[in-house]
Image (cartoon, rainbow, N blue to C red; front, top):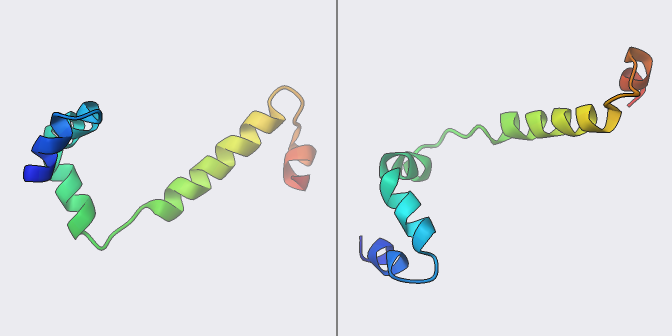
Length: 65
């Protein structure tokens, strides 16, 4: 693809090289109607709560959160 070649020769060369390395995944992400965005969002939220409660959170505090 011409845009990837231009990207590989510009300031975003690492991005272009990454796209080339994993071109099948990039194509699948563009073509597929499936998304794991909801799952990723829930995991991110859970990790945030875990970090906030680290060292002081007991079950009652975590449930209140």
